[in-house]
Image 1: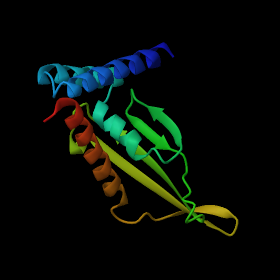
Image 2 (image 1 turned 135 degrees about the vertical axis):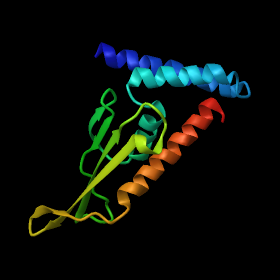
Image 3 (image 1 turned 90 degrees about the horizontal axis):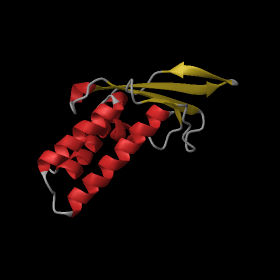
Amino acid sequence: MRRLFKILAKTVVAAFLAASLAACGGGDKKLARSLDEDVTSALGVNGYLWRAALDTLSFMPMAQVDSAGGVIISDWYINPDVPEERLKVTVYILDRALRADGLRVEVFRQEYSMGSWANASVKAGTALQIEDAILTRARQLRIEVVGD
C-alpha cells in the first residue's frame, strides 16, 4: 500500500508540475523530460503508455492493473447494444520508452448461446486498432507535457 501511495504521489506531483509548465508557455523542456523520466521510473513502465492504456480502456471494468509489471487486464465487457457478445482486453507494456513495439494488446471475445458463453474469433485487426489508439493517446499526453 505504501508503494502504491508513493507512486500515486509522484504521479500527481509530476502532473501538477507539467500543468504548471504548460501554463507558462511550455516552460523548460529539460525539466519536463526529467519529470517524464521520474513518472516512468515510479511506475516501472512508460508513464505515457500506461496512462494512455487506462484512458483508452476506461469504459471497461478492470480485473487487474499492475503498473510495476506493466499489465492491464479488463474484466468482461458487454456492450448494451450487443448483449450476446462480450470482450476482454489485456494490455502489456513491454518497455520504458514510448515506442510502438513497447506495447502489445490481446483481445478475447465470447458469444452467448444456449445458456453459456463460448469463445469466438476476434475480428482481424482489432488488437492493432486498440494499440494504435493507445499509442496515439500516449503521444498526445507526451506533447501536452514536453511540448515536442
